[in-house]
Each structure stands twice: as C-alpha cells, then as structure tokens.
Amino acid sequence: MRIDRLLWFLRFSKSRSLAQKWIGEGHIRCNGLRVEKAGQPVLAGNVLTLPFGDRVRVIEILSLPVRRGPAEEARACYRELDAGATIAIAGGKSEPIEGHFSP
Image (tube, rainbow, N blue to C red):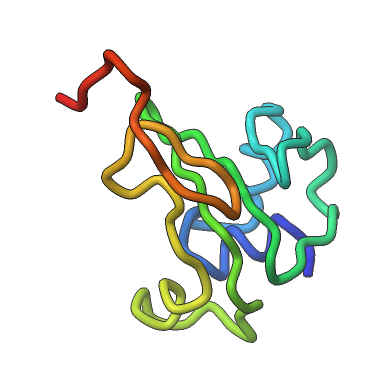
C-alpha cells in the first residue's frame, strides 16, 4: 500500500493530498529511512516515524487497512512503540535514557 494512502486510512492525515505534502517535507521515516515518494510501499511490520508538532510518534504497522474507517478500526492496524517511554527502539524494548526523566 502507498504510504500516502496509509497515512490517510489510519487517520494521521485529513486527506491524501495533505499526506503527500507532509511526505514531501521529508520528515517521515519508514524503517529508519527517509520517505522520499508518496507512492513508497508500506507493508505490515514496517516501523514509521511521524513528526507531530513538538513530538514524534513511532508506530509499527500491524496490518494494512482496507478502507478509511472509524478511528477505532484505524488504531487496530498499528501500535505505538514509544507510548509513555523516553526512547523507542523499533521491534525491541523502550527504555528511558539514564539520567533523563519524563516531564
């Protein structure tokens, strides 16, 4: 599935054209590599890094959605890797940096 379509289906973007613009800014990463094209394929198991203002969300794609459905349906297709942690490590454990604390 194209990454722009995925971001729209998973409700990270209000429209596909806004997802394409966001991708064009060059801040989105898939498995640690910069996403350069809106048509880049994304598969289940990929890890996406998404900037949101003053925070970054790291998610693992669990399954590819078949439509842009309700938010609950979209959330079932991914899991956050950094929820409540200071650092997110793809496919591994999330551990805080020694000497750092969460606000």
